[in-house]
Length: 354
Image (spheres, one colour):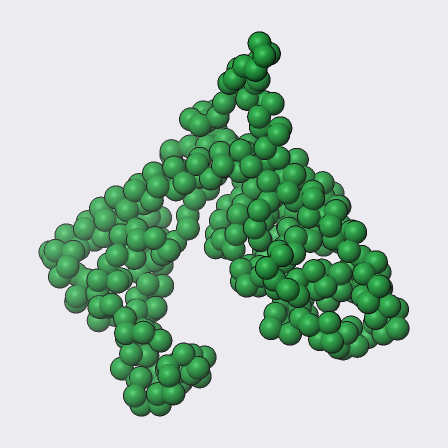
């Protein structure tokens, strides 16, 4: 746990739109797409024969569409962030002015003094969570830094809630329309959760040893809970070559699937990413009550390797080059993004389907 910046500067940066305070983009479809290229547009000639952008796009296996998604969403997020920053600053300045104070004065008195002091239980719990990161220092030695960290966290959360109240009070609306995003065709085949006729299908390409996939795991779980009955999740394998245990972990999940235990094995591996050697996978199978003989034979024989390889090829064709990779009704989302980004994408699709 490192010494933190000044509480005041961090909190003000947060409420004025610093990156990471809130992901609030909502990417609904609009008419204009400033980076798209007509598939029929001629982009090259060889031996007198034209090559269209559509030809190149098809050859790229989805990578150009993914680049387009990134360009469009980065541009929109930058614009949206600037709007949010301006609105937040104006709302807070108006609030301070109504109290006869400058923004800095209001922050130092009205806001800071309203924050509850960290309790001993909160501080000790935080210390236990990060005990291995403080180089053997005692609770007493890091106490002041713990206080500072908890204050910063409370400041961020309370300020965000307060700004949302101000937005409602003043009838704030964001009227800038998000861009239309290209869709990638990805087969939704494999183990799935949620109804087959759900309006939103998420195809996830993942690697059980990938730390970013592990980070995305609770986010996806929350999404499935919050949108129960509205989202179908399809899992596809994409073990990366530099993760030595990922291939066998993928095969283990497929072997568990034969016995109706894919998702319990999926959860077991994502919550034990440091234990994915073959002997660990067999131990997980025992814990889950699988037929040990059938599981061991399936895993040792490598009979699921071809299926895992087929998933990888489909992912590569769709432009996947890393994990986790998600396709929400064909809209690409790359990496372990914040929950809000998934929520925005699902809400957009539900609105479009509705």
